[in-house]
Length: 178
Image 1 (cartoon, helix red, strand yellow):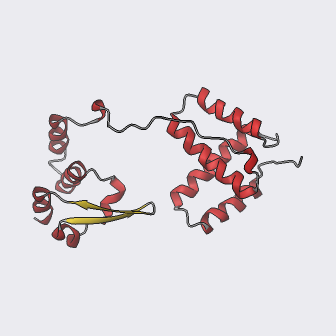
Image 2: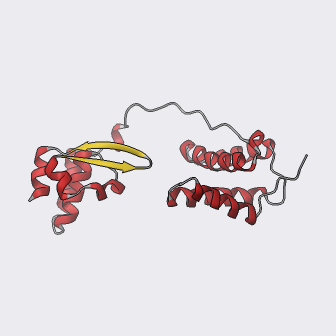
Image 3: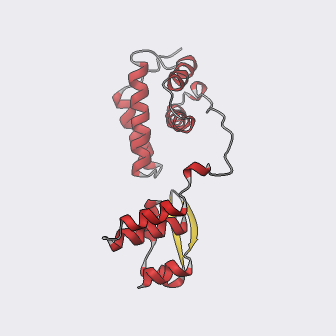
């Protein structure tokens, strides 16, 4: 069996591959960070399925969240596929989908009002808070809110290769136009 070592040259080649695959800058950085962390873990050992399974167990013992571990494994599996080492890939950890948001993660009306009130001295920040809370958007999606979109009552968001339409509630629309 051939020696399968993770070298800096190999990581740089993978970096160029990710750019060629048109991955976002944040995704490229995350994949490289995950690959380098694995490279430190594996050291001079050859990459095998057993080493990958041990790394997966190591991540679990470090008490990372399941979603975090799965995202790290996705980065590494991408590298392994790129290198032609697909037989070393490991499966992600199965996790039951949550079809609801835990109540303790939701803002109460009082918390929302306190949040908006805390921003009363900064009208722009206050409107940002109201927009996020009223529409459920991510902070990264704020840039799609233009005067034209607000006037039309809907914002088309293109993020992470996906497109979705955000409807702007009437009260918020009026506040934003003012």
